[in-house]
Image (cartoon, rainbow, N blue to C red; front, top):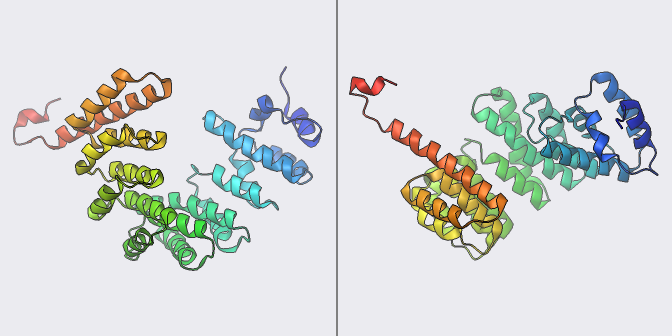
Length: 318
């Protein structure tokens, strides 16, 4: 039986009833009128009900690309409950609309809840990247970078500082490499992880030595970020270490090594992935290896094309 939008609002309002999970798709892509109708009841729901709803909408949107709940997330950024505000920001992680920058900046600089400021710091990374590829006006990029630099220097919460550094990893600002280096040398495992993530985002080979070293770190969390960074930076010298890591004791490290080998390309990486595919039994692992192999083939074909000598006119025929 199909639940109408009006019926869904009635069910949501009645907290004696469980969330109608199978009917929440009715909230996808709401127009302005229906969004207003939803928020007329939203403000009367308990914190627990709103928290459960915003989390579930995020979960369903991850599983189904056809579901769009952005109007709800945008309004929930100003919710009175910190957990709802945090999840609303997190759920907008793919949205590239510059109109989100002001509320994210306000959350970063003014929200009393550290978890909300941390979510905003992380979310702003997308807009730093957009600015670096000239898809965002320079003035707005500068404001974001200044906000993140201030948060990194002054916020009392370590997660806010960490995520600010990670977002600044995309930035070409001259101050950033020293900040990454400082975090890397801090001796704090969480900060080292963030430094490695920022290194990968920087797309700068200046971090090759640090990344290669941390591929052998005793900490799985640090090995994980080093493996990811090795792929992002296309460090060919990391191939042997990454091949070793596909047998790592940590599942996430293994997965990161597999994907990074696909980013690097080359015969050794291809042989290792094909051998692993031959012995793999779990469906998720097989899918990951196949995707890495597909990416590897693309990388190698592109590399071969770029290495062609176009002096021969025949090279221009397709």
